[in-house]
Image (cartoon, rainbow, N blue to C red; front, side, top):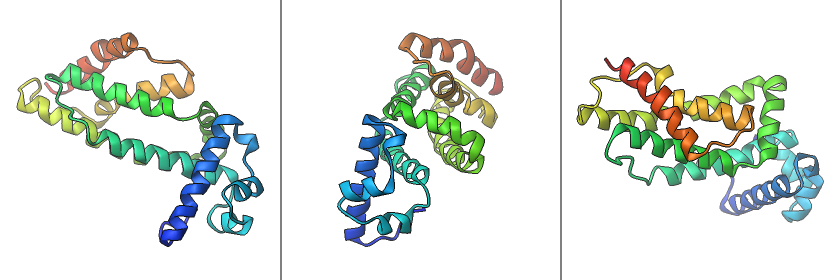
Length: 199
């Protein structure tokens, strides 16, 4: 695991390592990633890489996780009030699709592989995503309560349904989600579930 308390120079080096790793993952795939090559292209030594990451997957995972956090930061600057609950659900669905589609396809394959070989790591990743998703959905549900579209919060499983449906389609089924498909998910599954759960 990377040391998050690296010095400023270390932060710059860490960014270079992430940049090289992400570029190789997107252009050549996971098999092209090895510590010797990463070190050479990031202008550091293999010992520095080994000091912070145990395996190539650890490095790739942290690289993509870092990129995901940057995208999450950008999404927090967006106003979630588009007028009504349905439009707000579509907005957060579009944002989540954009985030997932920004990841290299190779990473999605790695996640599927790691689900079997390293389930603890994937559970950690999903737990962090769950926390972020609950924060976003709670914000738009509170707006819906203020506007009297719903009267109370639905259960957690209902709150996370949109994210889980999108994640399943993109990662597990490798299926793109069009605007029309997103609207169908919201109109016929997610919104009715929220309305029912908030009765």
